[in-house]
Amino acid sequence: MDVDDAGPEKKQAESKKKSPGQPSAAAESASKYPKMDLAQRIHKLLMVTTGKLEGEASTVALTEEVKKEILEELENPALYRTLQEALGWPPLDTDTVAKIEEKHAETLKQLEKKVEEAKESAGDMEVLDARLEIARFAAKSCDKDMALEMYDKVLDLPKLSTGKTIDALMESARVASFHGDLKKNAALIERVSGYCYS
Image (cartoon, rainbow, N blue to C red; front, side):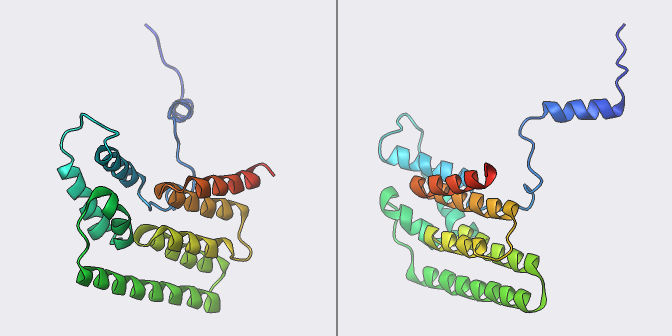
């Protein structure tokens, strides 16, 4: 009979070795937007619509799921309009868009106020956190250009550590990738590489 005499520390170390894809320490604090699983579903709809993916069952349910997520969870009329022509979606109701845009303007105003308050009465980390909150909101609910602009404001902060710079660049690259801007994505990844190998 074999006896496993490995102690609990050894077993724990072995289980860590065996578990692939361990998240980084920053994984909990990383942005979950834009949602890359949504990008995959949008890509599937585009492939079916253009006839590049055949033999698929009806995508009606998937289309409705994606529309609902874009408009209700993300509240992102810019993304809807980007897909509208390619996927043959009906135009958005102007009242709905106006309400969402008004809500976004108020949210951005409040978030900018947090940045100013952090500059006046807190430290660099609080300013960074407030700036990141704006960038992440833009990645979720605004268009690509606005999201990238807000990440540029994060990257322009003084005293930004190398690790935080890499995090912001990676989140920017995620925005570019989500929107299919491969050129911008490559440029951002190249900047990350510069920090990693310098």
